[in-house]
Image (cartoon, rainbow, N blue to C red; front, top):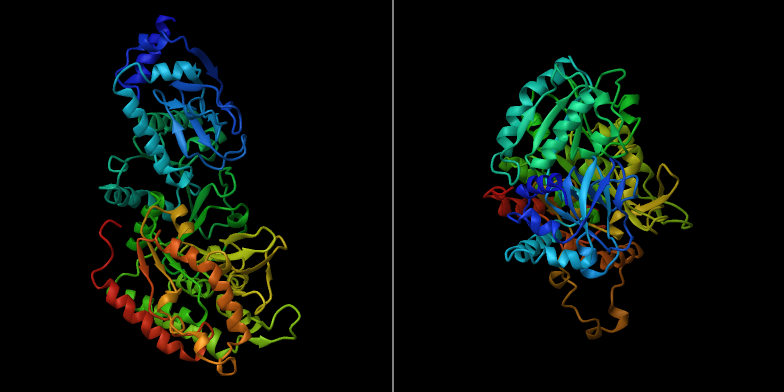
Length: 576
């Protein structure tokens, strides 16, 4: 092995966790093969035999489980001094992920025997190796859980008073928020340099350096050409600042769901409205903010650092009025400080009103109008369903007008069950009324709803009546969940023994209640598992209220209010 390789190894091992302190000659004595991988090439592909492990000498390698040439996000970025692909030779299993060279890369390749000898070169290596495996297992393969190292905020309207205000005020918000956050307390914030002759190459160098050192950095850019594909692959979080009222904007190229679009509005704006350019491509989130509002700047800072506070509202028919009672309590206690809201079934309807920052009293009056006074259950000949939600849809369309899901002040996401894919479907863009009605359409009681692809959707509660995991995928911040699923052991019917009464005296439930109760049997265990993922779970004692007992909505509202007051008197958990 050459002297140049020894020098490469010495530099790589200086930043290594597992192999720190090893003498380069101990490694070269094993006879590994030195390889050079060009930027954009695969080191290995998911499903390939796992015959070799690699020690990265230079460059950055990204691990992902998506299509080999179209990664949807990396769950790990491997830098010099780190091993990659080591599980395959030790276990004999095929590759469980693909490894893409995000820059030009040099590696040393080890077969199984060489890898075992490498791990025995120094007494402390095996324990550090096991620790590294345990840490990787704890993070898993969700790109959303990978530590943030490279954050790019692209100004799509340079010179705009609104984006200029954000660029001036946001850094201080980010510094305050990052203090005390694991892995973010040494956050660096920098803007574009006018001296850069090649903005794309300059951004690339800064992204590589931030990834290599592991020190998180926020980089502000205003040149869309600098966000080339190779640079976007190195970016952990991309936000695009824009004026919401701009007639046209040149957006940087980005894959579907890759970027967060931040639309900035003047103080007098009541309800955002989407321009054509804002719907030209799907975004991971659309945030609508007013820069002069400090709470909106704080919201943007949390979105930048993936610390958004999420409210998740579960399904449960008439019991959904407990959501509004809980919201009233949060307002009273000064705790309604959410950045994003998600809901399923009746929770989707309440979430759609929360997303437009309506006070709880207005949410209650709107629910009374849409659900109680509008006679939402229009009877139909029982061909596809017993009822329709036509009246409720008309009321929702009247209230929201032309506003779409991406036009809410809080990012809004509703969920339905897609009958074509048999999966939970999230709605983050498009018509609000359609998304809400789809999420509420209990099969058999209400007809299914077609989405934009013509696929039929029914109530999301069939698969997941409290989608906390969906919130966890999008944020590392506080997640508060309001569950309407009572403990069956505490319900009034739980202790009843049908054998004690003759069948002639049993009161058989209505068809609608039978359908809903049967549906909830399947989702109860899932709901309990989802509750354990939340930081705060509110589950009011509403088991005595049937799902379709709309006449008692005021009582249900009171129970939700009292439970939230009781549980939240001391405020939110301090660690969130």
